Image (cartoon, rainbow, N blue to C red; front, side, top):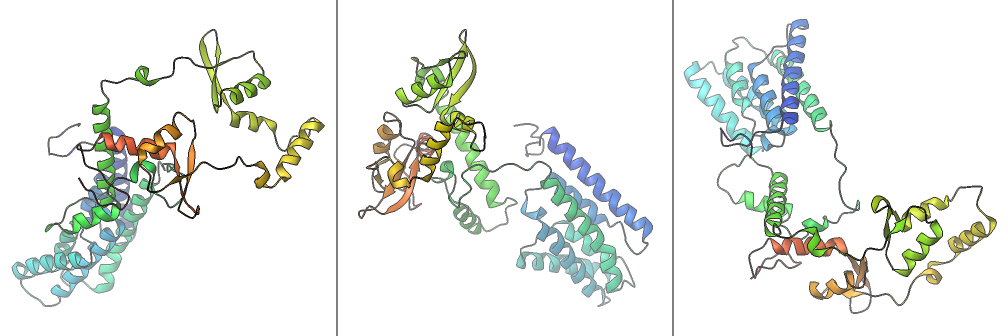
Length: 367
């Protein structure tokens, strides 16, 4: 943890620089608009909104809906209160408290909305068109800059681009379960369910590292390693990959690792569009490509049932060197696939759980 002065961890320097730039650009932009269009104001609430968006971009209070709807509802409700002509010591608490209740009801709580309501009450003779022109350009600018900030460093998502959760997430509490847990609280927590999922995954990783702190790669690695010399040719690589039933071999020179060669590397080198193929290879490749998969497949297939214990997978996905297995029902109908990645994630999760606690597939933990 870095910098716990206020009870909150300090973000890294990169995040702090992004926050600084967002606040500076947001207020410079609204100041420029206010300078060139006198009807647009540099509202104090925009400064608070920009700080919130920059410092807590993952907070529910900083989401686009909270920013736009929360600020707008607060301003409009305060404008309605202003029309009643009440003294400020009555209109201020009424407008602020009423705006808070509306933001709760519409799930768009945004704390600077309170400042927006007070600003409206301090503008005698304010009209609705003037209010909208004064407020909306700055809010839209903040939304634009906040959206750009989230897209500065897009992260390539892990997984196989399917609807299934990642293997490491399938035994964890789901996003829906986190949402249900938050809904049971009798107070608003400034944390999004997605953040809780990420925090739980980070905690699990730390627990796993602590559990395995006394173990190293040397404890589990294979020592009789099959490798290729950099001077050997592709034919030797192909023979060794088949002989030892592996999919990857290290390439060494004088004991130093230069790289790795795999079945994928060899297949890529075939060059499906190369015009210089030897005719025999081209004919053979074309024959294979035109064959139905029923003639190309290995059979009978080794399968497992969904009801089998994870312990049954260990020898299949380790000693036998299989990488994935079809899951079938009693009628041999395909119901899923299980892979080495699935098993690794499940075993890692089990290491971090209290002894005897198991989380079955239906998502209900039991002892």
